[in-house]
Amino acid sequence: MSSHIIIKNKIRSFNKRITVSGDKSISIRCVLLASQAIGTSKIFNLLESEDVTNALKSIRKLGVSYRKFKKFYKINGYGLNSFSRKKKIIIDAGNSGTFARLVLGTLVNTKNIVKVIGDRSLSKRDFSRITNPLKKFGVNISSTNNCLPVEIEGSEYLRPINYYEKIGSAQCKSAVMLAAIKTPGTTKIKAKKSRDHTEILLKNLKIPIKISKKKKFDYFEIKGPSNYSGFNYNVPGDISSAAFFLVMTLLCKRSKLTISNVNINKTRTGIIEILNKMNAKLKLKNKRIYKGELTADIVAESKSNLQSIDCPKNINSSAIDEFLIIFLVAAKAKGVSKFYDLGEMNKKESRRLDIAINFLKMIGVKVSRNNNSIKIYGNPSLNLNGKYEMRDFQKDHRVFMMSCIAALTFGGNWKIHNKESTNTSFPNFFKIMGKLGVRLNWN
Image 1 (cartoon, one colour):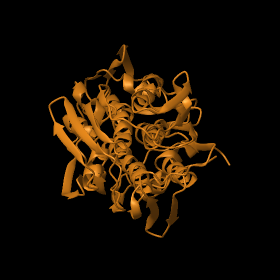
Image 2 (cartoon, helix red, strand yellow; image 1 turned 180 degrees about the vertical axis):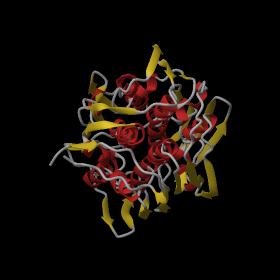
Image 3 (cartoon, helix red, strand yellow; image 1 turned 30 degrees about the vertical axis):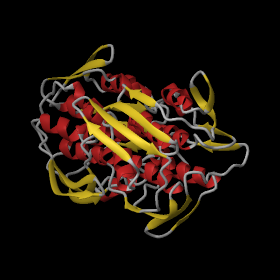
Image 4 (cartoon, one colour; image 1 turned 120 degrees about the horizontal axis):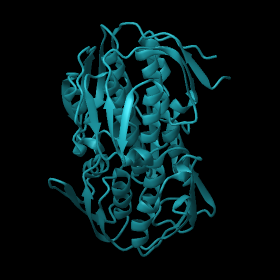
């Protein structure tokens, strides 16, 4: 079966309501926390992507049973010390940096060596930012060149640590938190602001965690060991998945879209703030709190007078996964858009900043770069009619989907490779495209 798609026509106008798949970050955290709870957990609307499937397969290898029902997954946990003590367990994280890093935090008390591996792309990413603090808990960790595979041998004599997370990485912070709940004593964390799904979940599970939020940093104290009971959770829609369709709507003439029940946690809504500064005027309706997470319906409408932005870099962490698609809006906006300090994009599934710059140049958009800051010279009349091909992007799911949105809104004759990459985070991507009237050529 062909691994590429052909797009020859722009998307037609639409007025629809859709839902998107469950939030990936929350789905992975729910799987890991349910695997160590005491009792049964039921997770509704769990994202059924490769990343989450790899997490489920991994907890099964660690001795945790689960079962899929029509509307939920049931996971049977036996507590913080219940992971399998079999030798030579190998956990395959696939493409998921979130799962690979967080699962290491849960393995700090395993008796035997567990080996964590990943695909070719993930195996190029730096894991020292995780392994270094985990070593301070008293565990043995080894790797080659600070990359996967990583071997971890836990300890019965864990000790609490003081940890300073200064990058703004929720993965690093969360890995330490998951280790802390297994560790006797109080672990203290000072962390640059980043996604806060883990601490929200810990708080809702009644795990002893003290949180103090300051202007630039958050401070945490976690007391362990802290067993907790099984739980029920309905995962809200993923704003990173919604982002592709929000931008497609903005760039498509005479269109309107409502996306129901999306997680709008303030650490994730940088895209909404940025697009509204660019005159998009996205609306949030039916706001509600679900177990500490803010959700809403997002309404987007076509916009012909999009404006450039001088993007404040303090928004970066809350939009880091969405900058690829934001750049398409900047390409169509009036004026020069400026983005700063985006080096973290190159530490994702691919070197996304490099790829984005080359992509924009390929479609005739002027881009200038100074280290990891860029200027995009927008063209409101941008309309493509040539032939374009996207390949060699390390099968990065977000690069693939960004390319599809560009093809459907800017025009041109496109051949986009690695369509299977959507399975990493958004297996329903093509199904939703169909609901919006897109007919794709698969050969």
